[in-house]
Length: 517
Image 1 (cartoon, rainbow, N blue to C red):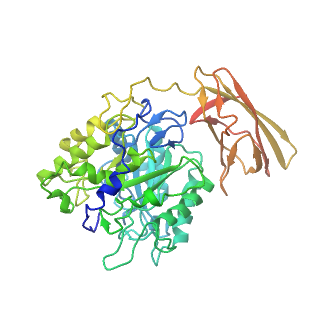
Image 2 (image 1 turned 180 degrees about the vertical axis):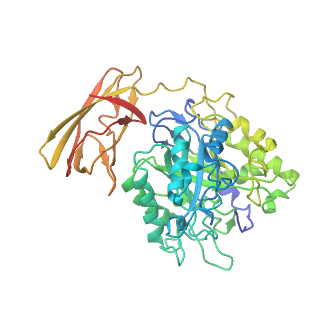
Image 3 (image 1 turned 180 degrees about the horizontal axis):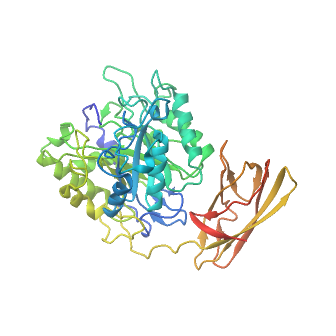
């Protein structure tokens, strides 16, 4: 599902490599690979809700973005069986592509064996997406939603088309952010897949200041609109293909971020993303260079690796894949994985793809949709961390890490006091850390049973999207740390309601349910 290509000049390499340190930064100590709650950033490192370092080592499963309006392969197997197999192979993150057309009336899911997927019978495309996310979360996987296409037919150079405007693109993202407020299985939004230029002129640019073509500015508009609804999501921004006449893969050129970084209204939420492919996808000139594969690290440094090496922001290698049809493909894949490094301090990745029916790459699954391409899987295995598992191999590559035990799960008690006057109420909350380890940064999440609507709050950054019963409250600087055996109070909100005003059935802190007093 890829790409027209532009040739790349290596002439600007020295300029960009001047930005890349000769020595790599030391990475934080590793912990469980798929951490608790929402994830955020600190320099190049992803951290979980307990501020423990984490890394995405994931997979793409496409189909929702196509005219099937459902992930592919459900004509052969059940979706839970698919996800269980992904987890068993140590993929901890699912990048889930979709198209805006998925949400249109008349976009009916098809090519599903309902005897193998009985709970998908009669569901819309977005409801099937919900089911995939729900089960992925149940088994400990994280999900990145990927706006892969505007319509189900083809990718687009720009983030909008004549049929699907920028306003629709943003409003659909806001809808998804609202739909998943409080659901910590979904940790981020990949805003638009592979923005790129058009041969002969047009398409996406970076840093030009144009409201109609500057992808960096569009990503800021969409990212900030999402964060206004769910400030906990990671905002994943892909590169373009050509910057200052230096071309690369669609979505893979992030050189412009050095001079023109993406600016978001919520700190520690930005993840840059690049795509990279093998010569069997397109015979780029660097694959026939006599120095191949030794020439590749300098190219990766220039295009996107400098963001990781200079501790600017996390990088997600959102797509990379190969049929292994050319002998150079295996060499490329082995060298690329070595470049990402092992351990939680390495570069994040989601391999393309789970599906065997990606024409120019194939997949991890063979054509029977069941057995595994062991050649590809064995190359990836040393770099896969799995769900809630500490890394089992010493770190190598561009990061240096030190093994430590996985983090202690959060244990908590929330005291919920209410002053109710019939049409509204004040909720006064206190959070007690009943565990043995300090809590450093927290997010409360709960869902009302009725129509309660927050009007204002204190002691936390409160978020409740329109027409949603789900509420989150994120810690402030003065109360983010709760030592073991200690508590924080002075947290609460005012709200209005009609009908009944039942207390939420459960309250989670950093993804773990607390006892309620």
